[in-house]
Length: 343
Image (cartoon, rainbow, N blue to C red):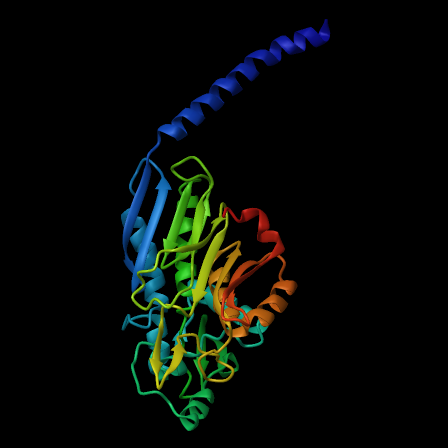
């Protein structure tokens, strides 16, 4: 009898819970998906999210904050200030990205390095175009490359990043786009938005469901020499729900000189463009800045080096496309990624 009375009391609550759940589901299905597009960091961004209001103005403000910190093309950015004066004040945003860059630098044995800018410029892939350097120029520029040249100093309640080497310059291009995607994702989550995809120049963060009410499926482009970026053929499609994904490759930004191909990925340890057989590296991680940095690192480390790093970091997942001994495209991917490969 007592159990029956308890059941009677519970029935209204259960009914309320069921009705409320149905209402929420219907409301979510009725809520539109917004799409915002534009240019930032010298590339295109595409953001899709489910929300009643258009958040484009707020999204732009967040992206501009990132640009003011890390853009080498913005004359007033923090990075430009450092490159001109070998010193800058570190904001909380700058410190966050700097510390992540320093961590990836350590974990990859220097394969990822935000001081590689002089070499990138010298080889004609940076924000300054110069003639191809000779070996003596490379040796000279290498003297200023390495995060060991950077020092944090606290003074008057401020934290400064300084370098005493006049050749040292900062280049956050291998991590800033990914971080920008993270910043927008944080904004959307702060607004209570659960279903979204943020993509900036191919660096992606996803959450929840796509407009088709299925998990987010993201394609990985087949690596073929495509300096005009017209190739859209896919190598595979990955289920990237509630994850961040970044891809780095040498098949779009390159040039030929003297019958030799020079790719844009510069090894900060040697000063020369990489000559590994790896063609593209796609990394999945909890945040896009991390995925972005490791994707670049794997292009420097090559297939075997990337595998060694992945062994130490099982939370990272990678899909690596490389050229085999016969010159054919081959694939290696993390075992934990197998269930996410759609085709």
